[in-house]
Length: 137
Image (tube, rainbow, N blue to C red):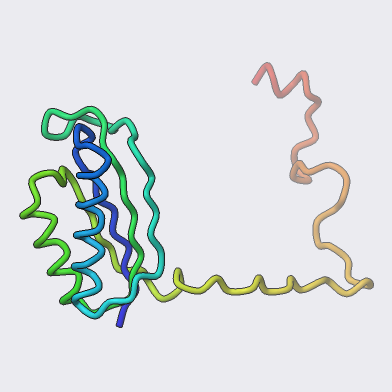
């Protein structure tokens, strides 16, 4: 079973009760498919980046769930059949994004090592012109 994230945008002209009913409907679709809801966030009404279906604002909802690909297929089918959902996207999280790995300790140089680069002037050894000569050439 993979972990998926799904964001959908609901028409902002719906009442709060209608919006909550749509959200509940989508949660039920995920649950009926045997998927486990890991995270749910209601992001509320926000301005859209561009106009979608003659709407300039939308009500954003975020789901993160663990389930089979069939759950994603059914959820997206329900999104398409629900006229009040104006946009959606569902992505599968890659394995390295699922668990945050602890940072690896950096290797320190032994105290006696010397850098191969001289610490003073960073110009190459053949470039001995003064700064005024640099500007004129």
